[in-house]
Length: 338
Image (cartoon, rainbow, N blue to C red):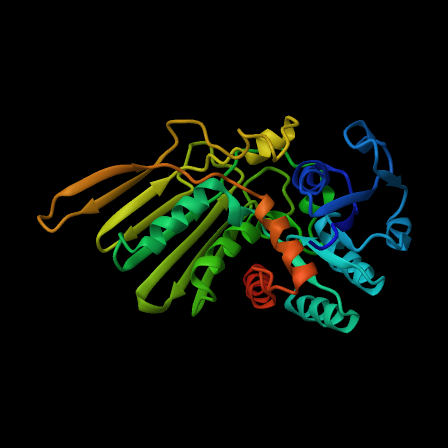
């Protein structure tokens, strides 16, 4: 068995604390060596063995570190990923990977030149609800797909404290690059690149400088329509997944528990991790040959962000193809940038 991948994390804010450190800590294929903490030193409270560096430069100078997780603010993703690749590190890069398709090309060109892997972290491929939806679609029970709707809504009227997300003109900021990256990646993972698309954005919060609402209509072969919507002023509960086909329909709310569990300190190796509470099943309605509707409940799969880290391990150690490909990211950023 190959040695664990010695790993460093560029930041220990929400992303580092919730989405990265717990997995590198519990997955035996990784060794968590260091975390950058510019201000408060909190990581040692949970990971007493980890080095806490004051700067990214210190992290990149650590010759033992093979993999760097770039999870700094989104407007710095491109700069810091280039810096890490040029320092001879493999990179797991938080979404959005970049602000423009030109930057995407440069990122992967730099990766090839450095002889290192660049992998983009798209955790929502491994949400419980999406995995259940994917299974239903791939089963063929819905017949020819007519429309697919994915939503991620919030109700947050106040302007957020993260300036890089809320300031006009800051690259890769705003709701489109934040939640849009998830919805578009889900769609690309299922259906690939659309033939064409139409995009609408709006600003509804008082004092907002950036769009806080977006809607995409993606056009695919065989008359498949995909609708992606997100807003920060949506008070009512909306289904996260709604699929209509010629033989039936599937509807499911967003009830993935991983983020909430990790935020409360649960580790990914806990037996209860990733399991949705009861009464959150999806509803599958199938029309039988007698034109009667048959309704059944579809339990969600177990959510498992650890699958990303398993893929990282196989990519770095065995040169396997990472499931989020360069083409996927180029297509995604093309839609986000439009």
